[in-house]
Length: 322
Image 1 (tube, helix red, strand yellow):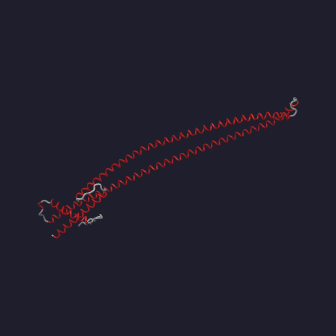
Image 2 (cartoon, rainbow, N blue to C red):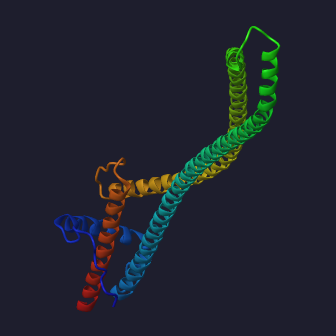
Image 3 (cartoon, one colour):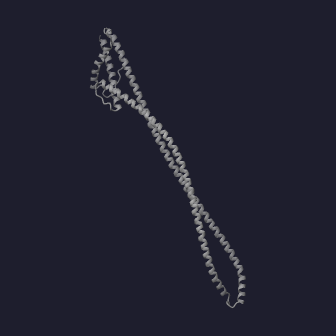
C-alpha cells in the first residue's frame, strides 16, 4: 500500500479542511457515479472499487505531475532572476573600476607634466647662472689684462707728463695734471657707468622678453598636449558609450523577455487560483500576491490528495467488510 503523503502546510488538519472534505466527498461521489454507465451498475463492489482506485491513481499522478512541473518552473525563474541581478552587479562594478582608472590616470599625467615643467625651469635657471658666472669671469680677466697694460703704460705717461711740464707754464706739478686728469676721468666714468646701466637695463629687458616668449611657448605646448589628450579621451569615451549602449539594449531586451515570462506565470497562477476559489465556492481576491495564491493552490491540491487517499481507504475498508 502507498504511504499517505505528509502535509507541510500549517493548517493541514484544521477544522476548515475537515469541512472542505465533508463538502467535496459527496459531490465527488456523485460525479463518479454519474460517469458509470447503467449497464455497469450491477457489477460487483470489488470491480467498482478497482475502477475507482485506478481513477484515483490517475488523478493523483496528474496532480503530482502538475505540482512538480510548477515547482520546476518556480526554481528556474528564481535562478534566472539571480543571474540577472548578478549581471547587473558585475556591470555596475565594471563601470566603477573604469571611472576610477580614468581618474587615477589623469592624476598621474598631471603630476608628470608638473614635474617635467619644474625640471625644465630649474635647468633654465642653472644655465642662466652658469652663463652669468662665465661672463663675470671673462670680464675680470679682461680687467686684469687692462690693469697690467695700464701699469706698463704708466711709466711712459710719467715720462710724457714730465716732458709736458717742461713745455707748459699752466701746470707746475704732475699732481695738478693728475688732478685734472682725475676730474676728466671721473666725468668719463660717470658717463661710462650711465652707458653701462642703460646697456644692462636693455639686456635685462631682452632677457625678460625672451623668458616671456619661452613661458608662452611652454604654455602653448602644454595646452596643445592637453587638447590632444582630451580629444583622445573624448574618442575613447564615445566608443565606450556606444559599447555600453549596446550592452544596455541587450540587458533591457533580456529583462523584457523575462518580465513577459513572469507575467505569463502570474496570469496562469491567477487563473488556477480563481478555479480553486470557484471550486471551493469562496470569493477570491485576484489582486493578491502570487506567492499567497500559490500557497492556497498548494493547500487545495494537498487537501484534495488527502481526501482522495482517505476515500480510497474507506472504500478498501468497505470492501474488506463486504
